[in-house]
Amino acid sequence: MAQCKAEQQTVVQSKTAEFQWVMGIESSCDETAVAILQDGTKLAANLVASQIPIHQIYGGVVPEIASRQHLEVINGLIDQALKDAGIKLEDLDGIVVSQGPGLVGALLVGVSTAKALAYSLNIPLLGVNHMEGHIYANWLAHGPIDFPVLGLIVSGGHTALMLLEGHGQYRLLGQTRDDAAGEAFDKVARAMKLGYPGGPIIDKLAMQGNPAAYELPRAWLADTPWDFSFSGLKTAVLNILNQAQMRDEEIVTEDLAASFQASVVEVLTEKALRAAEQFGVKQILLAGGVAANMGLRQALEDRCRQAGLKLYYPPAALCTDNAAMIVM
Ligand code: KG4
Ligand code: ZN
Image (tube, rainbow, N blue to C red):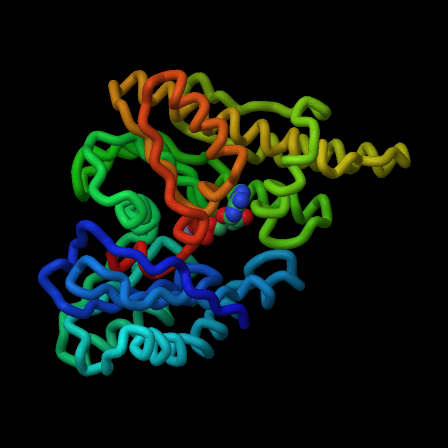
């Protein structure tokens, strides 16, 4: 099992600042993660055990296998995190756990572990929203961010535009009607037989391809302009693949990857910029696994610079699931 240390860093502001040692636990999908925050300011441990190699052979996350795998590794990860922080279990003053949304069986492992620890140690337990965790990865990376800020949250399970007006004050402007952006990357990559997870693979291929090579749709959804839809785009890619197969024609993988990514990036970028303008917000915050996409970062950076907006996104290791974003 791949186990990596995400970046160690100092947190500027935390919801658990009055506690000395707080453990964060994340198990909502295919990453088991444990982090320890010291004095609300310093990440003393930050471990992510990814299950990607296990799910790769199935072309996607198998929920039952994910739950069992979380169960296999979570205790070892907690022990290692305590070791990294140089403390004992009894030193913990609080536990923060990702309570959803996510795969129910997978979440259950983290939440049950967190409950058991909090109960046995007689310390407080705080459940946090996983998407809120993704948003706060930006505070972890950049320190305090002023409100209001427009949030574009793009992950394997969600795609949402939010107006963040204060801590805990979020207005959901729009979300996906069907596939999430990351889900679309994963499904298209699977259809193209590229492997799992599709996002990073397509991202890399897209850099070498022509984004105008294949004509693909953009779902602007005029009646609900802040919503997203990626299923039509996915179907369009499937049609191209099927037709090429029937006609015995070659697909230029890099070009199809670049054309698909260009469609996703254009819709995400354009809607974020339009929403920022409409709501008079001068800052955009990008979060979630798809925030690691180089094409999306570049397009948003260019557009924000032209429009005089400030753009925030976390380093790649804090875009995908981790426990630092949960505990902070
Ligand atoms: O946030 P995350 O780790 O898990 C969820 O909360 O869903 O996001 C995982 C998603 C996957 O769909 C993956 O393909 C996508 O993030 N992803 C990317 C990139 N890196 C990860 N999508 C596009 N480009 C990337 N570089
Ligand atoms: Zn996530």
